Image (cartoon, rainbow, N blue to C red):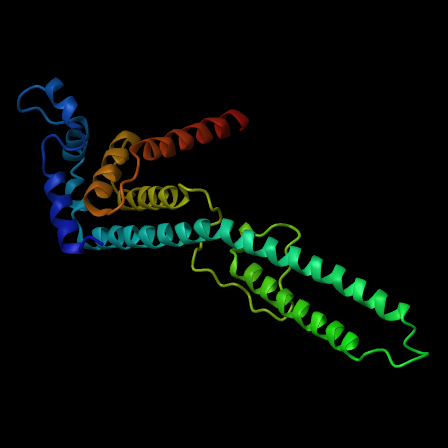
Amino acid sequence: MISFASFQRNFCSELSSPHFGEPAHSLRFLKPGALSPAAKELAAKNLTRLLKRRKFLQSVHTSIEEHGRLSRELDMIRGNVTPTRSRITKLRNTQKTLATIHETIKELYFRLEPRTWDVPHEFEEILEKLNLCTDKLLKREHYLVWALHPKTRKRDYTVSRWALPNLSEYTLQTLRTKAPDQWLIETLNSELVSLFSGAASVSEMTRYKIISALLKTGAEQTIDYGTIKQHFVSRKNLSAKACKNS
C-alpha cells in the first residue's frame, strides 16, 4: 500500500499542475500558459485548498486501503468457488455410492435369513462402518458448503443447523468483478460532493478528473478509467429517468 505521505505529496503535486486532469495526448491542444478545463474550474471557484486538506486526503487514503482489502477478499471468494464445488460434488457422489453399497449388503444380509441362523456378525459391522463413513463425509460436505460465501452456494446446498454464520469480511452486496472499483468510485464521489457542499457546484467532468488523479496517485491496483466514466454516465441516466418519471 502506498504510504499516506507519498500519496499526499503526489496528489498535491498533480493538483498544482496547470494541466491538471489532462492526458498527455491532449496537451498539444492547450494554448501555451493556458489552464486545463479542470484546473481552470478549481482555480475560479477557489477549491484547490479544499482538496489539499489533510482530513479529506486521509479519508480518501483509508477508502483506497479498504478497496484493496475488498479486492483481495473478492479474489479469494471467486477463486475458491470452482474447486470447492468440485469437492462437494465428489463427496455427494461418494455418499450415493456408499448408500447403494449399504443397501446391497443389507439386502444380502436379510436374504440369509438372520432370524433362522447365526449370520456372520461382519455383515452388521460393515453396515455400521458404512453409516459412520457416510456421516463423516456428510459433515465434511456441510463444512465445505459453510466455507463458501453465501452468495456462491447452490440452491440445493445445505449447511448444518449447528454451524455458526459464515462471517465473511467481504461486505459488498455483489460479487461482480468490478464491485470494489465501483464502490470506491461511488465513495470518492460522495466525499467530493460533501467536501464541496458549502462551495459552488463542481461539474461532473471535473469530479471525474479529481477521482482519476486520486486513484492514479494513491491506488496500487490500476482501475480502468472507463469504469470511472461509466459511473458518471449511469448516474446521469438515472437522474434523467427520474426527471422523466416525475
